[in-house]
Image (cartoon, rainbow, N blue to C red; front, side, top):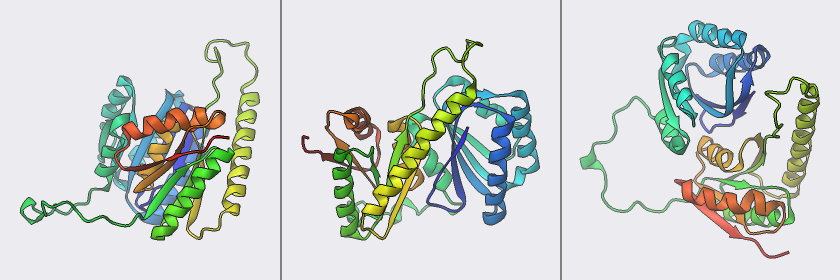
Length: 285
């Protein structure tokens, strides 16, 4: 499955890739990529691999053929993964495309975005750079993680307050975790995959509806919202990097859903993030 991750720049696009890719996945994905190429010209692309299990044979051919046909339509391609074979796959991709392709481990996600955002101009010489501590700048874009619980709405209220202070953009993000199907890859007698897909679609639809309802309640003019599939920790950090956000707001504490989603997740994000983090201590129920 391909899932687009909104990026702050028009000439950089990002996609999360999960599961085993089929020809049908490519037939839905490639037209979107062609549209972006026609609209913005040569692109830089970030591809984040999460629970990725390779391609079907025809899907692999779709990938190679598209790369050859659009060889001049890509500047740089960053692959973010977590497995040795994915790094090898990146090296193999260089044989089919002339664009710069580089592999990054998950904990190098910010390095991947910085590499894509580099321009062709020379950097300012070190002698011209000030050695003093830079002046504090107002926040321009905040990302707030939510799970629709009352505790979560408290953290969102704090995020609205912080964003309003600097007249910044605010993005609300809800992460829908993948459904695990034990033995599905091995048991040919399992229920038809359509049942699983239909269940996942219903979960995503409910999440989208709740996100729209939450956004409608907030009186803030520069509000955006998104629902993405994935692991909460990695997806929140990935979305913040894609948006080039300068502050992530996340709740901590809670004994229900929030304890699972934002309790341990908040701690993990604080350890891994390389941007400002506001951890909102939520009141007891």
